[in-house]
Amino acid sequence: MGYTADAVAEGVSIASAAARLTVRNHILVETIAGGSDFDRDQLSAFARETLLSLAQEQEEAAERMRALRRRAFGKFSTSGGTHDYRDRDARNLRRRRKQYAGVAKELRLWADDTERVSALVDEARNAAWGDVEANLQRRLTVEGMTADADPDYARMRKARMDALRLVDLPRLASQARRRREVSIENEPDPVDG
Image 1 (cartoon, rainbow, N blue to C red):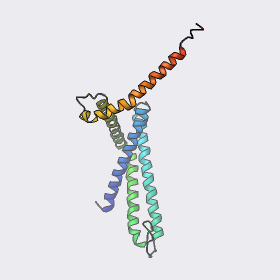
Image 2: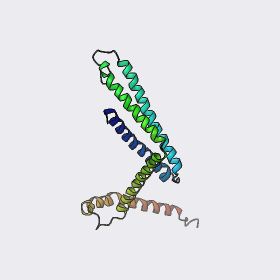
Image 3: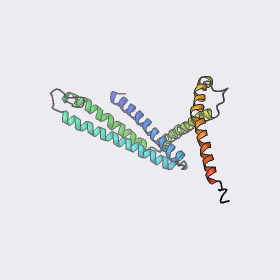
Image 4: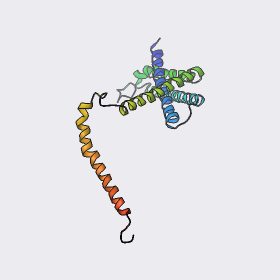
């Protein structure tokens, strides 16, 4: 495999992770948070759109490299900065254009492959489920914690007691005062009675 082929494979790998993350987030927001049903066809269409959008980004980057290469051609002066390309950069810019174009081509092929799109949806679904499972596990661990099972119980006891004394008890006293005031206001006047 050549340098360009390796870079294209790496670019596709990065785009794959981005697509999986985008589809996973869509599942979390639409299906789990939004209460919608898991719809494989809808998610497959969304995954295809995501892949095509990523391909479009790569094609635009390839076109930028082409334009930069044209501007750099024939310039032999000293570069004025990182993105101030010169003729000596033309070969590298051409290679980068090919890499971007190669990634775009692979992503478009992927978007047209029903089985690969389905696999992407499955990976995103598993990742979303893993997020939900981990979140539930954390909540169940915290909410089901007992003093015997909490390794930080002794260390955190003073902080909990301070919070009880300085925050919770004054809040309860304030609420009790308000309830008394409301009940006094709502009592019938003995004179009118």
